[in-house]
Length: 406
Image (cartoon, rainbow, N blue to C red; front, side, top):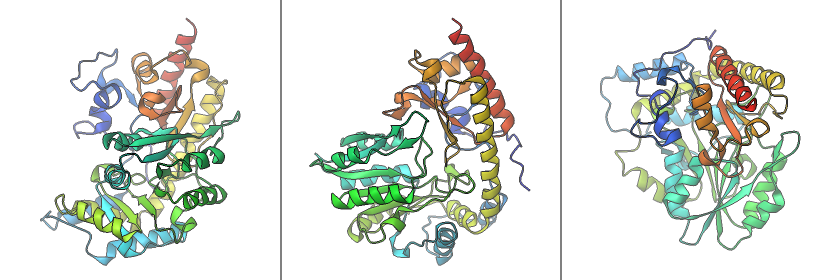
């Protein structure tokens, strides 16, 4: 029903994907860096938004709201949004959040900047499972707080797991106060099992930590995989904060909207007072778009997931054929492939720079763009038509083989 093979022209839309890669990836904010490719010749497999057209029901909801002809200061007042959000949660995970606990933000990352500043004292530490998305570290650095990197473990078969003994040792440290938890995990794509979640919850409760659970990728999972909200694992734990949004799975990150579920009333009151201070909180088009996604987006999302499953299968086959030394498993979630290039590019210090110059492919990877435990890995965005992925992978193959032939 939906055409995910369509190539959508994103030029002249002020998209970070097309126009912002120089500053984001290469810190070339003045555009002076020279490449052997023109900007519009790159295959863009980097930032985590999609090359697919949005769900038609979401587009129509935005148009309908714009037809009201006034876009004024807005908050989420009407019960219809909360009903749509919780009906979605009930359908997908058999869970509902109390309305009074649901707060909002201009995205999950802005909320992390504020929450880390509120929860961490001068000497306090935040625990991150690594490799981690760079913007989990940035708020901690920005607020001049401290971090503990808790390394995930990768076995010889390419499977990622939690070192629970190490996690408990880190949680037991005197100044450990917050765990930023990611499920599904970015960048590895793990969907943590109920057993794993219960072990994490037990450690968090034992050491009385705050836990911020980023679950933005929870709806972009492989067919047949189930996501379990941390709130369902820890139904009575007051120091749990859950972050969700339809923006990732419905490709509307630019609308800047997220649900931040805060159980602790004192923290919630402080957080709401802060969000009320910036222009009355949220974009009215965002409210309409997210409600439409929750009410009408299920079939579109289901077809998207099937298409993504095909893209991952294509990548797996390509890597098996062209890069037999790479151990790669299709992730349980996200549209991002976390690929270990060390067997072929172990001598390359800056893989994103190599790929841009030698392959004409824009991607992220390594410890410079991710947090710890990421050397030699690349993250490939597969949320695009298969024809583009094929071209990108062929360029990568040719560049890597040329490099290894030297």
